Image (cartoon, rainbow, N blue to C red; front, side):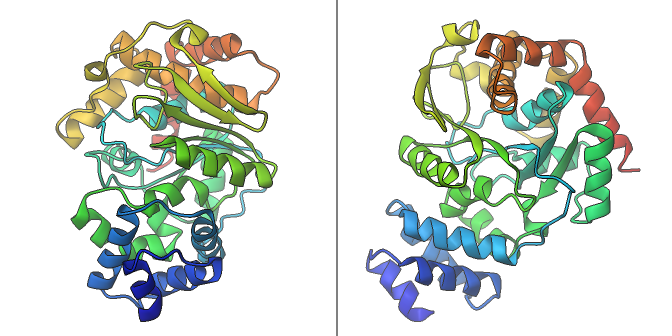
Length: 331
């Protein structure tokens, strides 16, 4: 293990097998906190290679608790985070809008590391009880159209490295891995990424697995459709550039997407948007991200039709009802 860590500290790239061995060591607590911090720091200094990403991912999925949900015919909406923008919980809200539009969702998420409130933070704050119990997740998916999987309960390596990641407080290669290791293995995926290079790696990897996917990056740095700039979207058919006009929505300002200064404020924004009490900018960002996910699942829809389905789910309170039904099951 020391040889692999030394190789990283010398800025050398790991082979796929070495990456697998390193992730196995992290998951089985063979690294102390200082060594894990060194590994994370090494990848802050350079981009992860495809072989390294594949090796890390293979080990994470092999070691994961994998719930059998009777089908893989659902979508995950999960971003890398790490964009430093501290937006409100757009992808998590979009998951409920998408479920409210009749698309089953098995969402993978975690606590925020480089942001104030990750998806797990806000879900926990609002009363969701994390579990890796297969029966609970199946019941939620069947009765509400959505379930939520808190990553550390399914991935030993993510649990082992969580404390060091929080102490560092900056994005790491685990941000890149998060959307790629949903333990329920969905056939559909809508993932935001914090830069274009990661988007292209995602596209290559997901295309090789014959998944239906949308990989999203706003050109001004957001790991979601912010409507503050044009958005690059990767699909199985190639790349496209989406403008606000493509969504039929007005442009947003960065300030309009601010996620608040506390977890309670983040939760308040979350519920305001679901209750149709959010600002137009907040609602429109959620509608745009939801539309791309809906179109990924319902591939015959035009983008305009998907936007209207997302808007209807939000404004009719179907998304809110989906959320309320899910929380009722926690009691």
